[in-house]
Image (tube, rainbow, N blue to C red; front, side, top):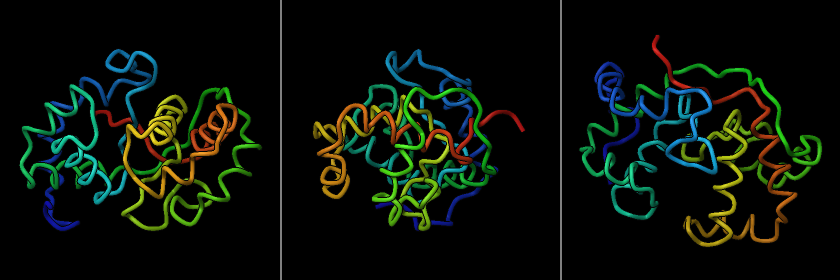
Length: 185
């Protein structure tokens, strides 16, 4: 496992992030993921970012570009990137969602212990979902249901959700103040 949380240098992470900007700094970008948006990562927790990068590097999470980019990172690189990305402030969200936010809020009550009532997780080892693209959240939940993403707790939590419930849950989290697109400061 990589460096402990808090061991990264945000200034070094900003420089390393230039490689990531081509996908993660373009609002609404879907080119690399034709059916869903490239995730927002500005303001995500350091431990979660490091764990995600390591999962791509080790093959536990799959995506061609991410596996290649993460595979080239050292543990210190990951810590630096995470320190840089975690420092971004929460952003209010704009734009329409396709799911039913009210129904999603009711569904999210079961998720609050780990992800927080509004998707801003109370502990840094759980990802913030607030403000994430609706399409990305739908894809992530579907991947947990199918087993493409491995996490026994998440797999059991989402297993019984219908497609409509997945869209509603994703719409609720997407409409909350939270993650943002990292653009030049």
